[in-house]
Length: 278
Image 1 (tube, rainbow, N blue to C red):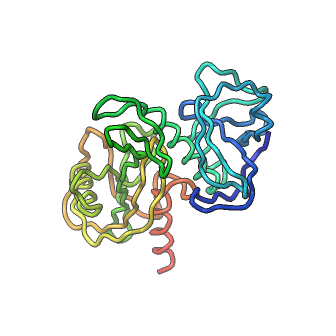
Image 2 (image 1 turned 120 degrees about the horizontal axis):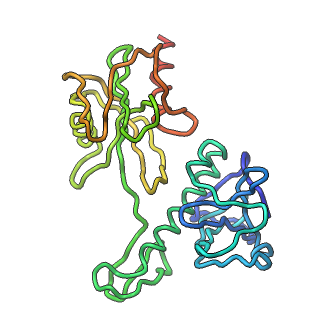
Image 3 (image 1 turned 45 degrees about the horizontal axis):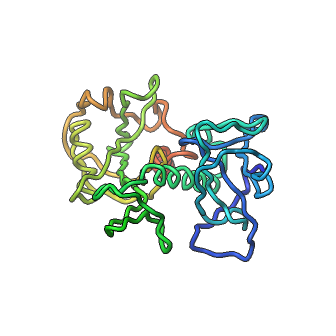
């Protein structure tokens, strides 16, 4: 068994290397196998799999991790685990493993979930098969089913030295974050931002600037991050998703997401750093 954590380098699947050695990340549901003693992600070599007696349902090539071909192996729900191992959620691994390894694990969980959820055609109900040329499930009727990625927008709205932060009903305690929502059909990212902020806290925004993006595998989002400035309106939470929202001076912020694990935290950190430098 191989343990990877801080120095792993993940290369996407479309880049070939000369190393044919295979390693496997074990996925059960949406959880990842880890070493129960060290708390590090456990990856298995081909020899490890032979004696492990793990009940595997499918295997999916992901790319290369430290120059070794990395596969996601789907574990059956009834299968036993190896001694001194346990399954861990992606939330539990967030911030505990390197960004590169987290990207690889995120890819593994999402591809296994996509494969498991798309065994039959939604048009004609026939069985689907993996396409030989691209990442897709194909049907004899011509239907192709690609892995689902749900685009979302997330925005830090500011007014001078004040940041608009909100408490979602599902957040613990007094934890606050930036506003976010899914892009709807026919919307641009900018239109979606304006709609979400207006719907959730009754604020109109202006001067939107793109910040960056983050894959968020809970279960399959791509977060598009923006900064925006306040235009008009009084803060009024919608009471459906957002139960509390307010303006906070950058020197007296509530508990917010850490910048090392979320784009929300990065948006906040970048703006606070800009204010401190001016």
